[in-house]
Image (cartoon, rainbow, N blue to C red; front, side):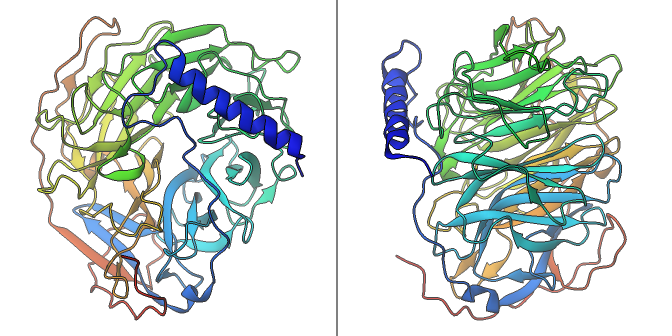
Amino acid sequence: MRSPTDSARNLFLILASIVALASAPGQTAPPGRFPEPLEKYEMAPAPRFYRLETSPRMISQYGPFVSYQVNVDANGNNIVGDAANEPSISVDPTDGNKIAVGWRQFDTWQSDFRQAGYGYSTDAGLTWHFPGVLQNEVFRSDPVTNSDETGNFFYLSLLVNNFCADIWRSTNGGQAWTEQSPDGGAHSGDKEWFTVDRTPTSMGHGFQYQFWTEFAACEFGGFSRSTDTGATWQTPISIPNAPQWGTLDVASNGNLFIGGGDSGSSFWCIRSSNAQNPAVTPTFDQITTVNMDGSLVFGGTVNPGGLAGQIFLAVDRSGGQTNNNIYMVASVSPFGGNGTDVMFSRSTDGGATFSAPHRINDDPINPNKWHWFGTIGVAPDGRIDCVWLDSRDAANNTDSQLFYSYSTDGGVTWAPNVTVSNSFNPLEGWPIQQKIGDYITVVSDNTGGDVAYSATYNFNASRGQHEQDVYFVRVSPSGGATPTPTPTVSPTPTATPTATPTATATPTPTVTASSTPTATPRPTPTPRSEPTPRAHPTPAPRP
C-alpha cells in the first residue's frame, strides 16, 4: 500500500506537469487535445449475470479476408452484453499457429469497470479461447503484449487505480499467464508501452524497456528497464521532452529507439545507446524531431472519448539492405483539417534524420475523412505492413472499415490500399466510456500480418445496437490486388509529398456466424447465416 504522502506527491507531480505543459513555450496542448490521463478509476466491478446470454461467435468475411471473433466464451460463442476493445496481439515467431491477444474486457456495457482480458489460438487464428482475465475484479487497462524470439509471450497491464503496471509471462502460447513481480512492480503510468530486445548478440538480449506518460504515472519518471524478463524494474528515470502516446523498439545492434510526441504536432525519435548495458543507468544521446505533417487527435468524431491513433515506431532487423531502418507511423490531423491521414516517415541513418512525411492512405485528399488507428509491423524479411480504420467510403464519415497496405522496399513505395473488413459503426457498443479503445495492432511474418482490431458486427437486440468485440484477421500481399507502387520521398526531409490515388476493387462483403469451425489454419470459410441474438436480461440503455 502507498502512504498518503505518496498520494500527495503523485497529485503534486500531475498538477505541476499540467501547469508546465500549459506554460512552457511550444508545449501547450492544441485545442481538442487534453493533457490528462486517458484512464480513470471510475467504478466497482459489475455483476456477472451477463454471461447467461450467448449467441454464435461472429465470422465476418470481406472478399478474401476473414475476421474471426476473439472474445468468445468457453464454448466458442459470443458473450451478449459485454464489451471488448483496445487489442494487442503477439505471435510466436517459432510457430505462427500460436497467437495471443490481450484487450480491455468490460463485463457489461453498463459499466466502465474493465479488466485485462486475454485469448489464445493454436490454429493460426481460426478458433479462439477466452479463459478469462489476468485477475478477477481488478481494474486494469492499456494492454500491451509482446514476445521474445523463442516464443515466450509477455503482457503489460496497467493498474488504473494507482497507474502502476505489471508484466505477466506465458510460456505456452498465451494459454496461462504468471505475474512476474508483485502488483505494481513494473512502475509505469498512463499509455505505457514496452518492447523486448530479441537479438541474441546484443548486450541487452532479453531486456525489456518501457515508457509511459510521465505526468500521469504512479511515481516520478517516464522510463524503466528490466534485465530479468520483468521480475524487477529499475527506478524510473525521465526521458528528454517527456514523450507520450508512442511505442519503442530495439535495433539489431542493441540501440533503443523511442517514438513519441507532445500529444499534438511535435514528434520525436529518441535514442539510447547504453540502455543495453546493465552496468549503467540508461541515458538518451540522440533526439530527432520528426515531421508527421499534422497533429494527433484526442476526442475526434469517430472516437470521442479516446485517440484517433497513437505513434508507432518499428525497427527493421531483416539483416538486408534495409536493416536497422527506423519507421514511424501516426494517424494525424492535417493542419486545418477535421479528419486524419496515416502518415509515414523513415530513417536510414540510425535516427539521425527522417524523411519527409508520406501519406499511406491513397484516396483523394480530403482533410475531413478519418484514416485512424494507423499501425505498422515489420516482417523478418523487411516488408512493412500497415493497417488502419478508414471512413473514406462512408456517407456519414463515421462508419469505418479496416484497410491495408504494404511496402517491400523500406517504405520507398507502397502498394495500393486494400479494403479488409466490412463496415461497422464505431460509435455503438460503448461501455459508458465513449470510445472503442486507443489503438489496434499487427505482427508481421514473411508472408503476411496478423491483426487484432475492435469492431461492432454483433447486434444486441436488447440494447438496440451493435456491440464492441475483438477480431483477428490475416492480411497479406497475396490477399489483395497486385501492387502498383507509388514512390514516396527521399530520406532528406525537404518536401511534403502528395499521394497519388489508386483505385482498388470492392469485394462483395458477407457477415456470418459460426460456433463449429473447421480446424484448418487461415481458411476462407463458406458464408453462414446471421445469428439471432437472444434477449438480454439487463435494463434498457441509458438515455
